[in-house]
Every structure is written in structure tokens, then in C-alpha cells.
Image (cartoon, rainbow, N blue to C red; front, side):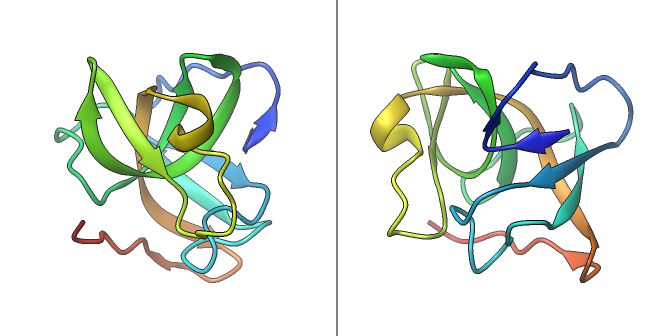
Length: 116
């Protein structure tokens, strides 16, 4: 399953789901080709978490972005790469499907949470 790429939006229902990152919007935190593990449910989303979400205006697009603030029953999201604006600045509020908990390919590691 890929994020930042139009496709059928998967239902994240397992304890952990693998997601492939496509595109440069989360660089340098995540890069094109990184594979991450996503946990649906669990602890509530907090500002600074990296999440998998669907924009309400683009329900066909699964994205990996950073949660900035709750808004209108969803979340305002931003990419870590300020040169790319394919986030809430372009598409508005998103509904979070899960929280990215780890990168497992090609450089295993925890995903840093940022203070916003």
C-alpha cells in the first residue's frame, strides 16, 4: 500500500499495517521508498505525530503527514518538506486512519515526534 498516491484507500484494521511512502513531502523524516508500520487506534493522536490519513476533499488519496492540530472533527496536516504543499494547505482537513510508529525499510528506526 502506498501513501501520497491515488489508489484504493485501504482500511487499516490490523494491529500494524505496512505502508510504503511515495513522494518527497515528508523529507527528511521519511523519504520516497521508505516502508513504515502504522497502528490504527491506540493512544489518541497528538500534534507532532506522523500519521496516515485521508483528506476529506481527496478521499481516494492516502497520505503520510504530520498532525498539526485538531480541526473540524479531523486534523490539519503538514508535510515536513516545506517546499511541497500537498497537505492541508491545499486539501483542507483530513481524517486520520492511524499513527506511524516505525520505519522498517530501508533504515529501521523510530519516527521522531516533533513539538509544534
